[in-house]
Amino acid sequence: MLLKNTVRFNKIITFEEFQHLKHDKMTTLSSLRFTGMALSVSALLFTSCQSKKAENSEAAADTVAAPQKKLPKPKSEPLVTEIYTADPSAHVFNNKIYVYPSHDIESGIPQDDLGSHFDMKDYHILSMDSIGGKVTDNGVALDIKDVAWAGRQMWAPDAAFKNGKYYLYFPAKDKKDVFHIGVATSTSPTGPFKAEPSYIPGSYSIDPAVFTDTDGKSYMYFGGIWGGGLQRWKDGKYDSAGSKTDLGKDDQPAISPRVALMSKDMLTFSGPVKEIKIVDEKGNQLLGKDHDRRFFEASWMHKYNGKYYFSYSTGDTHFIAYGIGTSPYGPFTYQGVILNPVVGWTNHHSIVEIKGKWYLFYHDSVLSGDQTHLRSVKVTELKYRPDGTIETIDAYYK
Ligand code: FUB
Image (tube, rainbow, N blue to C red; front, side, top):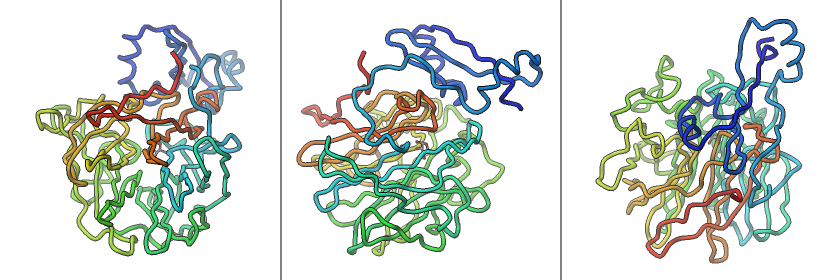
């Protein structure tokens, strides 16, 4: 009933207006539409007292905005189109490429700032022999009904190979509706995976990314603010009355992503969870108000020429940004943007070297007509400049 009382408006805005809007709330930003040089905004206004006539004329718009006309022309196509996929974590195991994505579905949950509309229930793993080659969807690898501790929302996963086993790491809300990170194992990279009875002790929030260094040590990077709830975790303790967004302290250091050393069996953390510092060129931590650069979610770690590259999404400003450091624990000095905003609210990626070339796996919502919770995984080449910085990628033709 609430969403049937919906009024939609369209407007052409200037680039400056767009920059301003980028800092607005999720519910408005998710409906941004790009139209070449101009940008079209389709926003939803919720009212509870529209006339009967208005209710009838908008009856078709009672879940999410219908796919709308002009979207920018993408440079890459979805890896698969039979299902919606997002949050791709790509790996090469035994010379084959595996992508561990979220499996987006339409479950009818209305959109909100906590991401309740991302109501995923299982994982499918994609595989291919080469970039541009045939992509196989290997079916359900893990279903939420087979995870004893999980209540809802299977979000962005990652995977690792060690000890002759494959490990699938995944965030989900527990039965008390708080995000933690689980692990499941398999003898095959495509599953099926068997989940451990409980989540990883000491784990919390979302978006695990597991990186194995050249010395064989593995680390999990994790965390996400707003719906991911990282702002509610201080010193490993959960504050159920905490903020729904961030700390609300613009001039204090922004909330930090987390890292933990993995145990040898890859099932637990073997050291304390640590905070990661992302700093500017003067060594000062990025501040809460620095929405264009501060960490929001979607951690990824890769190593290039002996340096550690920590990349992440800036969330409400929609960039994939990165910093470089000399230790897997940071600090990481902010360098710039790897991927400009894509169609859809979220931006999430992974970076992997395949046969001597580097690739960025990412997602957007072009295939679903800009429905922000129905995304598709894509891939494009990533290039380094001679000084080791990364060339910014734009996923669309101008
Ligand atoms: O897919 C659900 C959430 O959206 C992920 O966990 C975030 O990184 C964002 O992509």
